[in-house]
Image 1 (cartoon, one colour):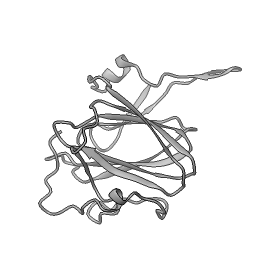
Image 2 (cartoon, rainbow, N blue to C red):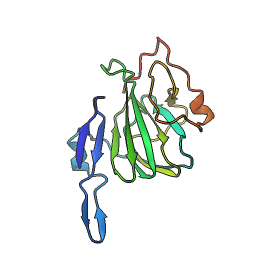
Image 3 (cartoon, rainbow, N blue to C red):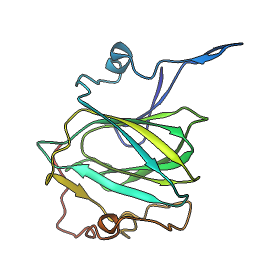
Length: 183
């Protein structure tokens, strides 16, 4: 795999080395040894699959609170999404900065998200599917969220959103007292 570190320390784009012939192609989605080269040591304890039907749907910006913070590694396996992460690590030099990248079935890029980040995406096509690896179990009542259109973060979404859950529309805006979370 080829890992490219993003401007938000600890986050990476993972691109597979593709082996292709007349039958099709093969590539590795995960290899413990290769991921250790970027410092990943935790076990993946949960895998999830999301399907989103409509273009211009936003899901996010979600995170789990300590001590249930998680590392995520995800790929888009159908359609195209604009995937966004926000650094919410207390004391981080890139605190409240965001980074967006297009993930698609065609480009086969994966996104490695360290603990202490909020995550979300907007669908760029209908019928989008993502596969997620998580380093911590989902713990009800220990999740948090940022408003997708919080002016303090100012995420530049490519499309005007047409579909959001009530929860995602109503995450609180960040206040001046928000210091972030300890990963």
